[in-house]
Image 1 (cartoon, rainbow, N blue to C red):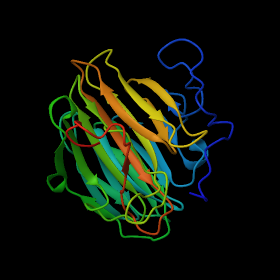
Image 2: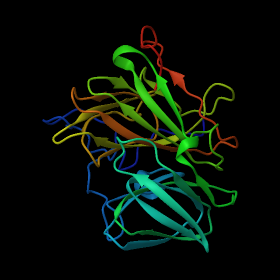
Image 3: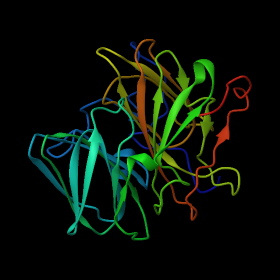
Image 4: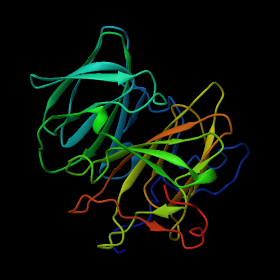
Length: 298
């Protein structure tokens, strides 16, 4: 694709595989360990500038009991998604009560859509952790509530490739301008985000260009998993990361997968995607060497 150059800036040098340890060579900025982007407002804050791209964002805010958080949306649309706990989202005097959940492993949650060019406040009586999945966009859509019972949970794959996808804001499930977001639960010992696939070129009807963030949580103490991203072209993204709760991996381009869960520890990840295409769609290309016998995808 002529208008999508490999990420060769200072934060995205190709992974060289040098050094020691499970994340050797991941200093290219694609692996984001928990706490490394924390600031006064967020425990995780990934915006286009930090990621070195143009559209996708993810923030996570932690609120103490009775805590509040005010934010302006600017040129991006956002979904407020409880990770644990419930909250009220006040969007320019429209209030949405989110019941939330005990944890990301306890089931789906309700959520709230916050349009661009708006001001919003999150308030939580009991406290909790809340993800803000965002995407730079053009249209200003209305604020809305997403009920948990309407979230389609899809089982993909079979055997050791079985995983459960919560399509709360997939392209065909919830209306956004650019933002696509889903949650995935991978049972301990299983592979997901497999076979490896990519979406880094605009090929109408075949593949859409989408930047992607993986945010991870692992069930149980000391749990971990692995995430692989490898080049789809010369100089492309290349990382193998051992991931734990609170970590993130950025996918500006390249084949990504598998996501591997440690036996005995279920893996959760939140995928946030957006791109420059005129049509909001999730079209992917599978790696030709890894398609047979996988029992499904993603």
